[in-house]
Length: 140
Image (cartoon, one colour):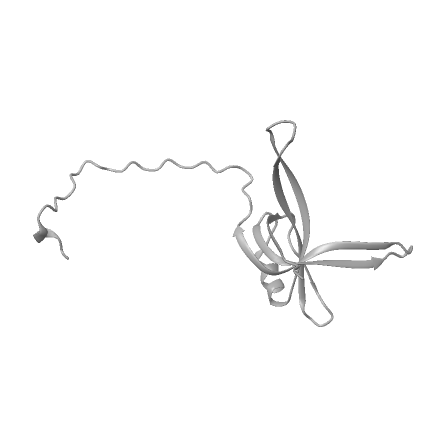
């Protein structure tokens, strides 16, 4: 059976760090993933955003707890896990999350304002190119 997930998204908040009784670190965070789609009625493109809860454990959790922050764009690879519990009133609940075993940082925080590109300096092309018309001038 195959249970593998690959997602690219941005962190919606700074990661939450906690420790298991064994002392192992758990880092949790949520990513927002956009899905563009075209409406049936028109050729207009729209975008939906989905939110996924991610958990990492051990050394990966320690590293990510230090490196990630809200707005960071990441690629995660992991598997789906379904948590089941019963509330105090006896209601059964479930929640699906992703347990990541690989995470790659793609880009830092998203800029709040677009950064304007500075003008590139013009190249000075007034000099004539060298003439390598004879084989004696070529060093190889």
